[in-house]
Amino acid sequence: MLLLAFDTATPAITAALHDGSAPLASRTVVDQRRHAELLVPSIDAVLREAGASRRDLTDVAVGVGPGPFTGLRVGLVTARSLGHALGVAVHGLCTLDVLAWEYFGAGPFLAVTDARRREVYWASYRDRGTRLAGPAVALPHSVEDRGLPAVGYGAALYPDAFPDARPPQYPSAEALAGLAVARLRDGVPTGPPEPLYLRRPDARLPGPRKHVTPA
Amino acid sequence: MADEPLVLGIETSCDETGIGLVRGHTLLMDAVASSVDEHTRFGGVVPEIASRAHLEAMTPTVERALAGAGARLADVDAIAVTAGPGLAGTLLVGAAAAKAYAFALGVPLYGVHHLAAHVAVDQVEHGALPQPCVALLVSGGHSSLLLVPDVATEVVPLGATVDDAAGEAFDKIARVLGLPFPGGPPVDRAAREGDTQAIFFPRGKYDDGTLDFSFAGLKTAVARWVEARERAGESVPVADVAASFQEAVADVLTKKAIEACRRHGVPDLLIGGGVAANSRLRAMAEERCEAAGIRPRVPRPKLCTDNGAMVAALGAELVARGVEPSRLDLPADSALPVTTVSV
Image 1 (cartoon, each protein chain N blue to C red):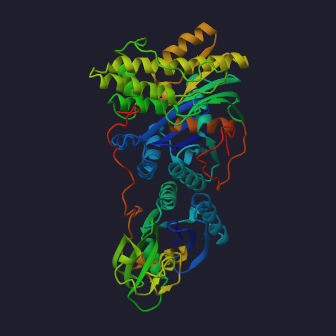
Image 2 (cartoon, chains in turn red, orange):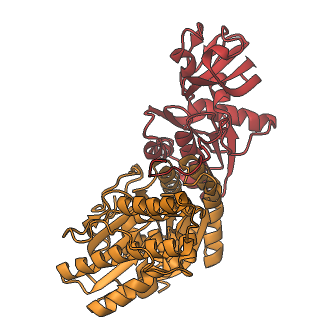
Image 3 (tube, rainbow over the protein chains, first blue to last red):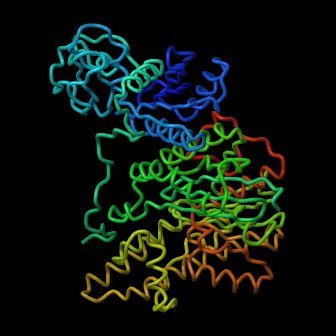
């Protein structure tokens, strides 16, 4: 197995390669405006670092959010296009699950990221591999059990709402790869590469026609 | 011909997911998935709805284009993509897909300018472009006059709209007349039954000596005229208003396009963009070009509106001319200057 993992649902652009037993290479850049520019070069870099070719890939795993839409779509369209062109399976995993996978403290705990507009994306976990609730979008102060330990930069962004913020701040593709490999090994179904938008597009139906001359 | 490289073009600057396959000057397949129906009730393109639709349409439309051309992804020799201008969020979906395909297939990537692609598409319709030519590109997002010494390397802006694009004016007039979005086709249809001389609407910047356009005043004048009738309790002659409005748009566009050809001593005028599908503009351009001794080149309507074939056509030209490919970190630029043919 040679699994390529990446996530673009947070300000981090993160890519990693995993051979089924161990991560081979990884790269993370935090730059929330350059997902589309940096993702493929990052993928190229991890393949080079591992001395592997894109043709050796057997699986692609991608974070499906929730997260800011534009960056999220970069990851998803990249995953789908790579899967199409290389003829390999594409697995979708919740980005909050990836954050949770790197938390080794006792549960329950939360994973929280920035949903902008003063809201957060959140989910709660019994342990690093078991989600209890979410993913959902909410105002920080209305998240259930917000006093629990909380990983993710959404918690750090709202310290009043999340008094027990913990690392990691951003999901890592190494964790995404590890989680995908674990699920594939254990026969836990991974999802399709479908985005978790959790919000409808902003679009208002037009009102009555505006007049140019005063009534 | 089979020796020429096969180029796959990806266009996502607005609401059409366009995938084209071109070999040299030969169009093999042009597949378009449009989200226009999802925008109609909002009266305009909603960028987030368009972006979501691009993500869903991307790989199926690539697949459809390949099937239509009887080709496989492994046959593709280069990828071309619209790098700008356009809606920032929709451009990124195409750019990210293009990079992934180029990287996975191990073929060069060309990020290209949307307007240069509108010019280049004529090569799959009418063969090699005369050098130079003048191009009039009119759509919902653009109204530009360009001097094109060489579509692969050099595009010079001559004039552009100072306010609304011509296609936007069609959308707004359609709304005033109670016609659906997008306004181009229904206004064109309504105008067929109307009198082009019924009402004289103002032609912005008509005699100002520039090659720029203005459609805001025309739009307001039409709205005022319609409102005055409505206030007076009279019915609105939709067909006459549509025909007279369309006449004003076609008049100013063709006048300035021919003036551009004269000033630069160029006998070839290319017309493209969605508004180039308008029947009155096409007819008036034919008449006036003939009178002025200018050769008009207008691609068929399907190649005038946004599509992937135009991007592939420009990509094919860049490959043939040995232009340096783009890097895999190329940015999408919603305001890419027209002088930048490829990034």
